Length: 236
Ligand code: CA
Image (cartoon, rainbow, N blue to C red; front, side, top):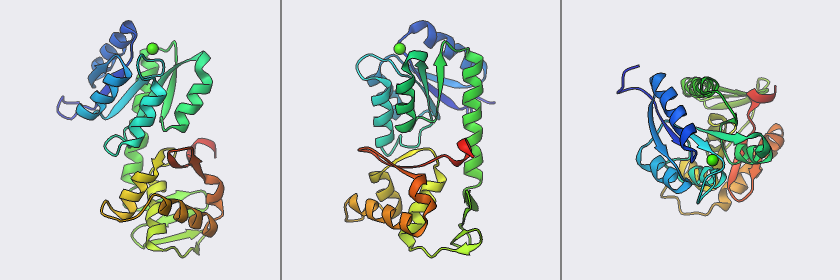
């Protein structure tokens, strides 16, 4: 891995020893790193350093990891940034909230740097794979979306969708397991210059669920944020 193409990882952790250990280990593995010791600093670094992934501690001074996660997901420039959370065993309920808020994975303290690196690499592989599949076909249970034919089928049967419904579903299928805010969906599917409200997104999500019953359970509403398509690869 050359330094120009090496992925950059932002580590946000207030415990200096852990921060240094993770930083050293990641650099040894060929990653570039950036570090922050508070939530506020972490948010600033995420915007300025443009990392490829963030390792985010849950318990942080000023703004905690959950709030950082929420803010990252709400801002268009960091909405898609992969997040791995560091949590203590006792914080398991927070871990669940973290995943709801859009963290991609979590590692429980105490952890070995080796295990963390393995998780990071696995996450990058998963993201690469979904990017490669981007232009072609998405599958979600019995549902198939073929972008080149511009069609959605369920077990081979055609499902007629409007252009916006199609766009919305495409964006959800492209980002399974991730929280997508109404603003992001509105900007992506309707465009930045669209003169409308985020209610439009709710209406179209409801129509999608009516047309495709399996989405009724699969598309989760995330309180005060937006929507998330359940990660199909996790369970089934
Ligand atoms: Ca901490």
